Image 1 (cartoon, one colour):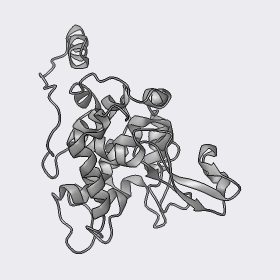
Image 2: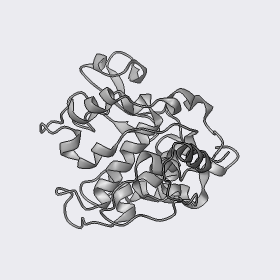
Image 3: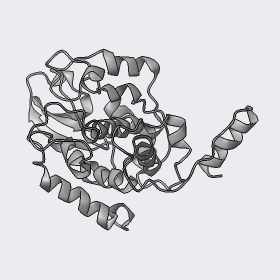
Length: 255
């Protein structure tokens, strides 16, 4: 049974009014400043899709608890003393509140935040080939014990970027404070957080992005995940994402 139909039936049995929703793909950006959909409204728009990455099963099922989300939003600070919400107010809407196949999770994030599905899928190909186990940004650190065990390499090297969208983190708050450990525990959280950051740039919220920055810059906002400053200096990264989107790499037999 399609997910949207199941949700409608359950709501009807509970006596709730359900506004009809479209199960059409998300193919364009919602307008600048548009509020994200609720988790349930985004879920109702997800179309069933087979699993291409069975190894993501545990992470695909994991939904963060309220306590974990409070710790993410308010429990950690970056080097300037800002928690996740102070840095990006959109993180109040990041929940990871969905479970499904890997493609269904990417659809959910796309619908929730108003980003074209194929752009989300292509970014996930670029970052991890859709694997939650992907490790990236290897670096020497003085305190490897503060990183998750699975990200350590040898006695001093660690991988700072983890998960399907490669959320980068360090204990000093240099990157994405509060996202550890949910960044590797939950696929939906990883994608949800990524999409909130992309919308932060797309909606014109960045007051430090420099010359040429402004709202509504679609591909530049995708590139900002890789490097936001100086603005529009991630052309090679954007080219890779666009190539995967154009070729729909995730549909190939050897993906």
